[in-house]
Image 1 (cartoon, rainbow, N blue to C red):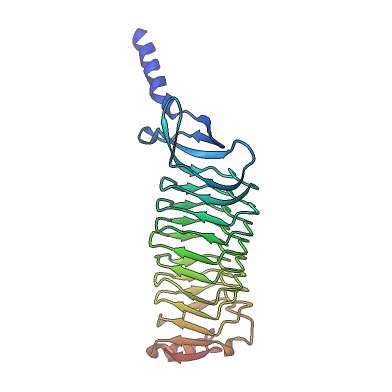
Image 2: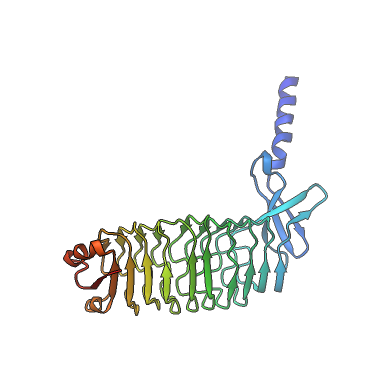
Length: 294
Protein backbone atom coordinates (compact mmCIF):
# COMPACT_ATOMS: atom_id res chain seq x y z
CA UNK A 1 0.00 0.00 0.00
CA UNK A 2 2.81 2.38 0.98
CA UNK A 3 4.58 1.50 -2.30
CA UNK A 4 1.48 2.46 -4.26
CA UNK A 5 1.24 5.83 -2.49
CA UNK A 6 4.88 6.57 -3.16
CA UNK A 7 4.46 5.48 -6.77
CA UNK A 8 1.42 7.76 -7.21
CA UNK A 9 3.24 10.70 -5.62
CA UNK A 10 6.23 10.10 -7.86
CA UNK A 11 3.98 10.03 -10.92
CA UNK A 12 2.32 13.32 -9.94
CA UNK A 13 5.67 14.99 -9.41
CA UNK A 14 6.84 13.57 -12.72
CA UNK A 15 3.83 14.97 -14.57
CA UNK A 16 3.67 18.35 -12.81
CA UNK A 17 6.16 20.09 -15.13
CA UNK A 18 4.02 19.04 -18.10
CA UNK A 19 0.82 20.66 -16.79
CA UNK A 20 -0.48 23.88 -18.34
CA UNK A 21 0.90 26.98 -16.65
CA UNK A 22 -0.19 30.53 -17.38
CA UNK A 23 1.64 33.66 -16.30
CA UNK A 24 2.13 37.33 -17.16
CA UNK A 25 5.36 39.16 -17.87
CA UNK A 26 5.32 42.78 -18.95
CA UNK A 27 2.49 43.52 -21.40
CA UNK A 28 2.04 39.88 -22.47
CA UNK A 29 0.44 36.73 -21.15
CA UNK A 30 2.14 33.38 -21.70
CA UNK A 31 1.22 29.72 -21.43
CA UNK A 32 3.35 26.67 -20.87
CA UNK A 33 1.64 23.83 -22.68
CA UNK A 34 2.30 20.09 -22.36
CA UNK A 35 5.25 19.10 -24.50
CA UNK A 36 7.77 16.60 -23.23
CA UNK A 37 10.51 16.25 -20.68
CA UNK A 38 13.06 17.82 -22.96
CA UNK A 39 11.13 21.08 -23.48
CA UNK A 40 9.63 21.73 -20.04
CA UNK A 41 10.85 25.33 -19.95
CA UNK A 42 9.27 26.49 -23.20
CA UNK A 43 6.29 28.84 -23.47
CA UNK A 44 4.18 30.60 -26.07
CA UNK A 45 2.56 34.02 -26.14
CA UNK A 46 -1.11 33.73 -25.23
CA UNK A 47 -1.94 37.36 -25.98
CA UNK A 48 -1.59 40.88 -24.61
CA UNK A 49 -2.38 41.51 -20.96
CA UNK A 50 -4.01 44.78 -21.98
CA UNK A 51 -4.65 46.56 -25.30
CA UNK A 52 -1.31 47.47 -26.88
CA UNK A 53 -0.33 49.66 -29.82
CA UNK A 54 2.84 50.61 -31.66
CA UNK A 55 5.92 48.41 -31.70
CA UNK A 56 6.50 45.23 -29.71
CA UNK A 57 9.46 42.87 -29.42
CA UNK A 58 8.73 39.29 -28.45
CA UNK A 59 11.48 38.32 -26.00
CA UNK A 60 13.79 35.34 -26.30
CA UNK A 61 12.82 34.25 -22.81
CA UNK A 62 10.86 35.37 -19.77
CA UNK A 63 11.47 34.55 -16.12
CA UNK A 64 9.13 33.60 -13.31
CA UNK A 65 9.83 32.58 -9.74
CA UNK A 66 9.96 28.94 -10.82
CA UNK A 67 11.74 28.94 -14.18
CA UNK A 68 13.25 30.79 -17.10
CA UNK A 69 10.91 30.20 -20.04
CA UNK A 70 12.06 30.19 -23.65
CA UNK A 71 9.40 31.84 -25.84
CA UNK A 72 8.99 29.64 -28.91
CA UNK A 73 5.51 30.36 -30.27
CA UNK A 74 2.58 32.71 -30.73
CA UNK A 75 -0.76 31.15 -29.84
CA UNK A 76 -3.61 31.15 -32.38
CA UNK A 77 -5.62 34.41 -32.34
CA UNK A 78 -3.15 35.90 -29.83
CA UNK A 79 -3.01 39.41 -31.33
CA UNK A 80 -6.12 39.36 -33.50
CA UNK A 81 -7.47 42.90 -34.14
CA UNK A 82 -4.58 44.53 -32.26
CA UNK A 83 -3.33 47.98 -33.30
CA UNK A 84 0.36 47.03 -33.44
CA UNK A 85 2.50 48.73 -36.09
CA UNK A 86 5.67 46.63 -35.88
CA UNK A 87 6.60 43.22 -34.44
CA UNK A 88 10.06 41.72 -33.91
CA UNK A 89 10.59 38.05 -33.08
CA UNK A 90 13.66 36.58 -31.41
CA UNK A 91 15.63 33.63 -32.84
CA UNK A 92 13.81 31.39 -30.35
CA UNK A 93 10.48 31.85 -32.14
CA UNK A 94 9.50 28.68 -34.03
CA UNK A 95 5.82 29.08 -34.87
CA UNK A 96 3.14 31.70 -35.43
CA UNK A 97 -0.30 30.26 -34.79
CA UNK A 98 -3.41 30.41 -36.95
CA UNK A 99 -4.90 33.92 -37.21
CA UNK A 100 -2.38 35.15 -34.64
CA UNK A 101 -2.24 38.64 -36.18
CA UNK A 102 -5.47 38.50 -38.17
CA UNK A 103 -6.81 41.95 -39.03
CA UNK A 104 -4.08 43.92 -37.29
CA UNK A 105 -5.09 46.91 -39.36
CA UNK A 106 -2.07 49.10 -38.50
CA UNK A 107 0.68 46.46 -38.76
CA UNK A 108 3.35 47.58 -41.22
CA UNK A 109 6.51 45.57 -40.51
CA UNK A 110 7.37 42.13 -39.14
CA UNK A 111 10.97 41.15 -38.45
CA UNK A 112 11.48 37.42 -38.04
CA UNK A 113 14.84 35.87 -37.17
CA UNK A 114 16.30 32.59 -38.35
CA UNK A 115 14.57 29.93 -36.30
CA UNK A 116 10.99 30.60 -37.39
CA UNK A 117 9.65 27.45 -39.07
CA UNK A 118 5.86 27.56 -39.19
CA UNK A 119 3.48 30.34 -40.22
CA UNK A 120 0.04 28.83 -39.75
CA UNK A 121 -3.14 29.52 -41.71
CA UNK A 122 -4.48 33.07 -41.65
CA UNK A 123 -1.61 34.24 -39.43
CA UNK A 124 -1.50 37.68 -41.09
CA UNK A 125 -4.84 37.61 -42.89
CA UNK A 126 -6.26 41.07 -43.59
CA UNK A 127 -3.16 42.95 -42.40
CA UNK A 128 -3.84 45.43 -45.18
CA UNK A 129 -1.01 47.84 -44.31
CA UNK A 130 1.72 45.20 -43.93
CA UNK A 131 4.53 46.28 -46.24
CA UNK A 132 7.50 44.28 -45.03
CA UNK A 133 7.88 40.76 -43.71
CA UNK A 134 11.36 39.33 -43.38
CA UNK A 135 11.18 35.69 -44.43
CA UNK A 136 14.07 33.80 -42.77
CA UNK A 137 15.75 30.81 -44.39
CA UNK A 138 14.42 28.51 -41.68
CA UNK A 139 10.74 28.66 -42.69
CA UNK A 140 9.21 25.27 -43.58
CA UNK A 141 5.49 25.98 -43.85
CA UNK A 142 3.35 28.92 -44.95
CA UNK A 143 -0.26 28.06 -44.16
CA UNK A 144 -3.44 28.64 -46.12
CA UNK A 145 -4.37 32.31 -46.55
CA UNK A 146 -1.47 33.25 -44.25
CA UNK A 147 -0.94 36.60 -46.01
CA UNK A 148 -4.22 36.99 -47.88
CA UNK A 149 -5.32 40.60 -48.30
CA UNK A 150 -1.95 42.00 -47.27
CA UNK A 151 -2.46 44.64 -49.95
CA UNK A 152 0.86 46.44 -49.43
CA UNK A 153 3.22 43.47 -49.04
CA UNK A 154 5.86 43.89 -51.75
CA UNK A 155 8.00 40.75 -51.66
CA UNK A 156 8.09 37.12 -50.53
CA UNK A 157 10.99 34.74 -50.17
CA UNK A 158 10.82 30.94 -49.95
CA UNK A 159 14.12 29.55 -48.65
CA UNK A 160 15.42 26.05 -49.23
CA UNK A 161 13.59 24.58 -46.23
CA UNK A 162 10.11 25.57 -47.42
CA UNK A 163 8.20 22.38 -48.21
CA UNK A 164 4.65 23.71 -48.41
CA UNK A 165 2.99 27.00 -49.35
CA UNK A 166 -0.70 26.30 -48.95
CA UNK A 167 -3.90 27.41 -50.62
CA UNK A 168 -4.36 31.14 -51.13
CA UNK A 169 -1.31 31.99 -49.02
CA UNK A 170 -0.63 35.25 -50.91
CA UNK A 171 -3.95 35.83 -52.65
CA UNK A 172 -4.98 39.48 -53.04
CA UNK A 173 -1.52 40.81 -52.19
CA UNK A 174 -1.95 43.62 -54.68
CA UNK A 175 1.52 45.18 -54.28
CA UNK A 176 3.44 41.89 -54.39
CA UNK A 177 5.98 42.32 -57.16
CA UNK A 178 8.78 39.93 -56.23
CA UNK A 179 8.56 36.25 -55.32
CA UNK A 180 11.83 34.35 -54.99
CA UNK A 181 11.53 30.57 -54.66
CA UNK A 182 14.84 29.02 -53.60
CA UNK A 183 13.01 25.93 -52.42
CA UNK A 184 11.98 22.46 -53.53
CA UNK A 185 8.19 22.61 -53.43
CA UNK A 186 6.33 20.29 -55.78
CA UNK A 187 3.16 22.35 -56.08
CA UNK A 188 2.05 25.93 -56.44
CA UNK A 189 -1.16 25.62 -54.44
CA UNK A 190 -4.66 26.59 -55.54
CA UNK A 191 -5.26 30.39 -55.51
CA UNK A 192 -1.74 30.92 -54.13
CA UNK A 193 -1.09 34.19 -56.01
CA UNK A 194 -4.62 34.96 -57.13
CA UNK A 195 -5.14 38.69 -57.77
CA UNK A 196 -1.51 39.65 -57.13
CA UNK A 197 -1.82 42.55 -59.56
CA UNK A 198 1.80 43.75 -59.40
CA UNK A 199 3.40 40.33 -59.90
CA UNK A 200 4.76 40.26 -63.47
CA UNK A 201 7.40 37.53 -63.55
CA UNK A 202 7.86 34.27 -61.65
CA UNK A 203 10.53 31.57 -61.81
CA UNK A 204 9.21 28.34 -60.37
CA UNK A 205 11.51 25.82 -58.70
CA UNK A 206 12.52 23.01 -61.01
CA UNK A 207 10.86 20.56 -58.60
CA UNK A 208 7.32 21.86 -59.23
CA UNK A 209 5.00 19.20 -60.69
CA UNK A 210 1.65 20.94 -60.44
CA UNK A 211 0.37 24.50 -60.71
CA UNK A 212 -2.91 24.66 -58.82
CA UNK A 213 -6.36 25.86 -59.80
CA UNK A 214 -6.53 29.66 -60.15
CA UNK A 215 -2.94 29.85 -58.86
CA UNK A 216 -2.19 33.09 -60.76
CA UNK A 217 -5.73 34.06 -61.74
CA UNK A 218 -6.24 37.83 -62.15
CA UNK A 219 -2.60 38.50 -61.31
CA UNK A 220 -0.36 40.81 -63.35
CA UNK A 221 1.89 38.00 -64.54
CA UNK A 222 3.42 38.41 -68.00
CA UNK A 223 6.24 35.85 -67.92
CA UNK A 224 6.58 32.54 -66.10
CA UNK A 225 9.38 29.98 -66.08
CA UNK A 226 8.52 26.33 -65.43
CA UNK A 227 10.96 23.49 -64.83
CA UNK A 228 11.28 20.03 -66.38
CA UNK A 229 8.81 18.22 -64.11
CA UNK A 230 5.54 20.13 -64.54
CA UNK A 231 2.79 17.62 -65.24
CA UNK A 232 -0.41 19.58 -64.69
CA UNK A 233 -1.57 23.19 -64.86
CA UNK A 234 -4.83 23.53 -62.95
CA UNK A 235 -8.20 24.97 -63.88
CA UNK A 236 -8.09 28.69 -64.59
CA UNK A 237 -4.50 29.03 -63.44
CA UNK A 238 -3.87 32.05 -65.68
CA UNK A 239 -7.37 33.36 -66.35
CA UNK A 240 -7.59 37.15 -66.36
CA UNK A 241 -3.84 37.74 -66.65
CA UNK A 242 -1.78 39.66 -69.27
CA UNK A 243 0.41 36.57 -69.75
CA UNK A 244 2.72 36.83 -72.80
CA UNK A 245 5.52 34.29 -72.36
CA UNK A 246 5.64 30.80 -70.87
CA UNK A 247 8.98 28.98 -70.66
CA UNK A 248 8.61 25.23 -70.12
CA UNK A 249 11.53 22.81 -69.84
CA UNK A 250 9.52 19.60 -69.87
CA UNK A 251 9.53 17.77 -73.23
CA UNK A 252 6.12 16.21 -72.52
CA UNK A 253 3.21 18.68 -72.78
CA UNK A 254 1.65 19.10 -69.31
CA UNK A 255 -2.05 18.52 -68.85
CA UNK A 256 -3.90 21.83 -68.84
CA UNK A 257 -7.42 22.53 -67.62
CA UNK A 258 -8.83 25.81 -68.94
CA UNK A 259 -5.44 27.56 -68.96
CA UNK A 260 -6.87 30.98 -69.86
CA UNK A 261 -9.85 32.52 -71.63
CA UNK A 262 -10.68 31.07 -75.03
CA UNK A 263 -9.06 33.05 -77.82
CA UNK A 264 -6.20 34.43 -75.73
CA UNK A 265 -3.96 31.41 -76.31
CA UNK A 266 -2.75 32.67 -79.69
CA UNK A 267 -1.31 35.75 -78.00
CA UNK A 268 0.80 33.67 -75.61
CA UNK A 269 4.21 32.45 -76.78
CA UNK A 270 5.21 29.13 -75.25
CA UNK A 271 8.95 28.43 -75.30
CA UNK A 272 9.76 24.70 -75.19
CA UNK A 273 12.82 22.52 -75.88
CA UNK A 274 13.54 22.35 -79.62
CA UNK A 275 13.05 18.60 -79.59
CA UNK A 276 9.54 19.03 -78.14
CA UNK A 277 8.10 21.64 -80.51
CA UNK A 278 6.31 19.05 -82.63
CA UNK A 279 4.81 17.33 -79.59
CA UNK A 280 3.34 20.58 -78.31
CA UNK A 281 2.01 21.62 -81.71
CA UNK A 282 0.30 18.25 -82.12
CA UNK A 283 -1.22 18.30 -78.64
CA UNK A 284 -4.89 19.35 -78.76
CA UNK A 285 -4.58 21.46 -75.62
CA UNK A 286 -1.41 23.28 -76.62
CA UNK A 287 -1.77 23.71 -80.38
CA UNK A 288 -3.77 26.93 -79.86
CA UNK A 289 -0.68 28.64 -78.41
CA UNK A 290 2.25 30.14 -80.29
CA UNK A 291 4.81 27.34 -79.80
CA UNK A 292 8.48 28.16 -80.40
CA UNK A 293 11.84 26.58 -79.60
CA UNK A 294 13.52 28.06 -76.54
